[in-house]
Image (cartoon, rainbow, N blue to C red; front, top):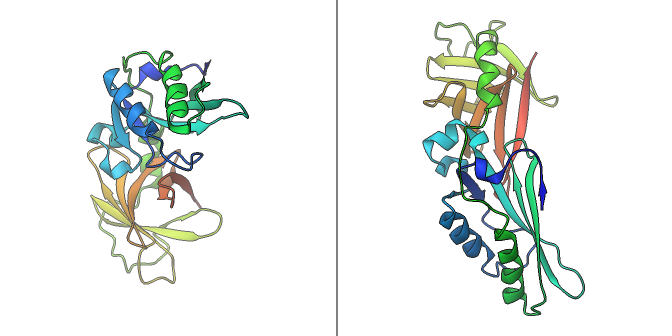
Amino acid sequence: MLAFGQKVSDYKYISLPAKFETFKEDFGLADLLTKTLRSKNYTVIPTDKLQWPADAQANPCNVLMAAVLNDSGFLRNKVMLQFKDCHDKVVSSIKGASNIKDFKEGYQDALKQTFISISPSNPVNQTNTIVTQTNITEKAVSAPSNTVSSTAMDNSAVRFSNGKTELQKIQIDNQQFILVAQNSSSPFATFKATTKADVFRVKLQNGESTLGYYENGNIVIEIPQSNGEYTKEIFAKR
């Protein structure tokens, strides 16, 4: 087992993908892993962050992302159980192997070997850099406190760019703002406040819903991908 500072047992929430990408079939691995994690007092949640419990949405760094990888060789069925944190850094990577030739039985047997290395959940609150770093910078990036019309595309709007697209931040009211391109008639993204400071529910221009937040004075949107995962789109203040 490879460990990387933090421990899996430091976490309460484990997020599992809808599909383990390196396997052609499920082979019952997701159910087996879910049952085992729950028996060790972990709370298993999906990758869709809008379905997460409120405290997990408020601090995504309290969630580990789990994946089972196909690590098979020529003669043995092998798997690797991997856990990553909110910064996509590997917290733990555990290998298991089986001599059983049948794929389903062999993969499950190999996965069971990894469970020995997983201690029961004993969570500690993970530092959420999203929140702690932005409490200071919020005043710098926020639009003026008075309500600004979404049509007021003037120099008072704060500009952000991801290097490809330049957007203006327009504060609609105390609870929501939009990012909109100067020549666009519809917002690129609409942000609505959550119960956690600097974390927002976001509706994208294509209708998809996701999460957004402030990070180091920038606006970050987690863009949904077709495989159920998310990528960070960072818009820096201009």
